[in-house]
Length: 117
Image 1 (cartoon, one colour):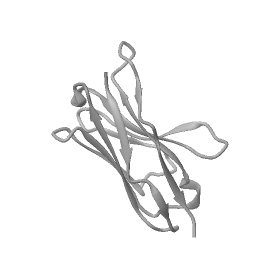
Image 2 (cartoon, helix red, strand yellow):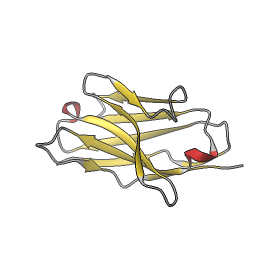
Image 3 (cartoon, rainbow, N blue to C red):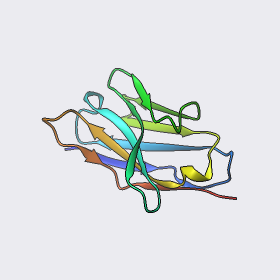
Image 4 (tube, rainbow, N blue to C red):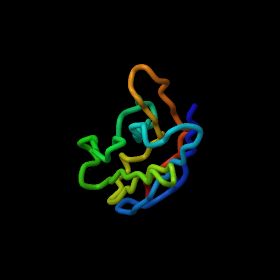
């Protein structure tokens, strides 16, 4: 069992920055690929970025060069540094823990990010 708790969302002006955190507990954090997804108003949930247990990263084209995902296995935490934010980045951001098809897929409760002047 894995519990995920996101934090760090809020209101920011275009061009600003935010850092999201996701604290994980309850299982072997370092065994999981961790990811951030987002769901904008009236839209489906989509991938933002993932990071494997070995540190390999993957990003959606829309955030490449602006967002950075990282993890601290000692603190059981994954981060999403978001720079040069745009209004279209407005969404609820969800943390995800995935360990392959033979294990449950876990989600956090989400944190709202609003980019507006």
